[in-house]
Image (cartoon, rainbow, N blue to C red; front, side, top):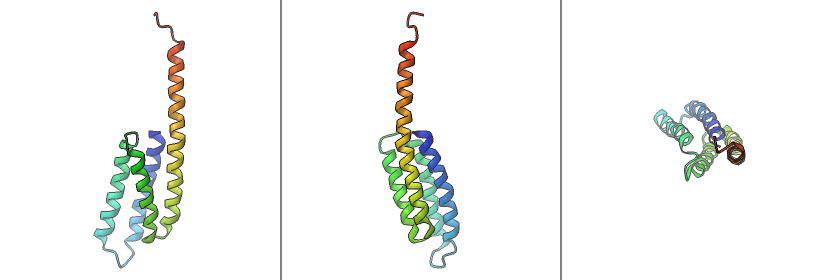
Length: 118
């Protein structure tokens, strides 16, 4: 699960950075505000790469997805991209858990079939 979720989060990091560049064009927003919010979101993406397998990591990832969708109120394209990344996040968590379960079963079967008296 860690690999799939981390890949999604790194993709989001780049999208958030590019959205920050687009948001700078808004005359109602100061550059410091745009980059403070974008920087915090980008930092959270990197932080969550390490926390995704810990308790609450997936929930924090969902909170980030909601924030990404909500950023569409500033950069309208982010409504679409936020939904796309939320779907990717769901797929990463769902299929990542299945992969982890399959790896555990494989490791268990490999442990049972190896000679223990060697």
